[in-house]
Image (tube, rainbow, N blue to C red; front, side, top):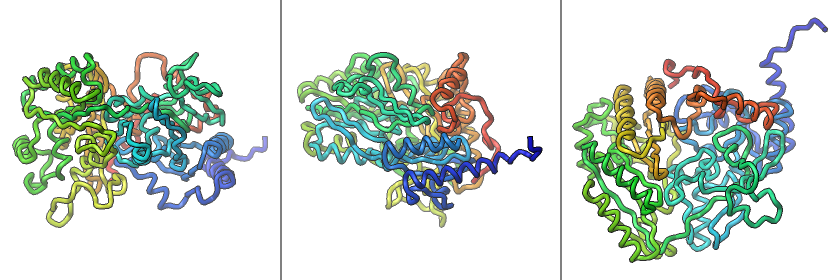
Length: 547
């Protein structure tokens, strides 16, 4: 023993970072490594306070470079946080749940690797965006639908699937319609799932399970590996296509009856695609900014003003939106008859809009349903206002939406609820009560992701530039999650805030996950804090103001 004092841990970590950066520059090129303050701030900005520093940003170009980056991180024990395109708005954007990570966006891994017109599947890397795939499918003749999400067209397909995100269309539960993952571990080892691990197996992109343990699930909502490719199943364009819409009044019992009817239609296979019933706040926020003048600068919206805004825009207290896929026009007419008989007695203004031969240009219904769009992002700008006189602003900026850049406050709380009136009413009542108490509107969409459950997507939208709003939104988020968990409705995915203090079960999952993590990432460098289910206090949550 030399008797010299131990080197401070922060000095050791800085030395390790410098050594890793030196090796990364050699592996991927200095031009693809960013340590300047503007880049770190840009990637470290989210739609809510994150309290986490990013040490550097590295951008590998392919799987081999990514493997080198992971090995370097493990060798120097530098935490590394991979993201796809970093557009995880409302859940943390590109920011990690743990501090002092090096961020690794995979936006340069953006190849469409395979496409099968006959068997309707496509294989993509994590940097492939919704916009890119839509353009690719259009070039191939527009014979398939990809089931895009309501997020930005520049978001990653793979990133959304790995969060088990929701999309439009027949394959709205996106994670249930993918296979053939390729994942790289922190050790540099590569795994291919299902039949894709067998050279020459033609069923790799066609069959989810393969033979032996099914590993795909290990890489969704986890930090056990980095997925570098994935096969997505596509929906063939139907011979006839209908969208249908309806509105509901204030009577909650009507919503109960409609939900029961939707459940029966889903179980019978009549509605085989994603179905959404959104409340009035979501419908209004898609059409205008918050009416500061009419509200007298007060929040949240009063019941009377909500009713006036519903009348102004022709929306209901609840608004249903679904689709029908049919073989031909006659089949479509029969599906419309069945839906009308099931929903018609309970709803207002039930209407259908159809398109035949969607392989061509299609009509407005097809365009709204089949293409990625920024329309749904308008709700994130709901509370933003112009400063002189609080004049009304356009719903979206002229240059396109960027929620992090534009100071939009957005936090998603998305519990899974049984598809029946009693449970949905309990969840909706909790959301209405908690958001009202904290000065927010309950912005709710009931997404029917299966025949038996809905995801109640709840958006807390606010203006981050207003002093105190960050803290108020975080308090509301904390209380919403607490009450919904107590009611028995955990979320289907978590924000980086939720990952800091996740709901805990009564089994041995944390210990088992810990052993898996140690086996697959012995140095513990890959995405620390991501879905680890270890109870910890949230830094600064519910009591700090970080505007």
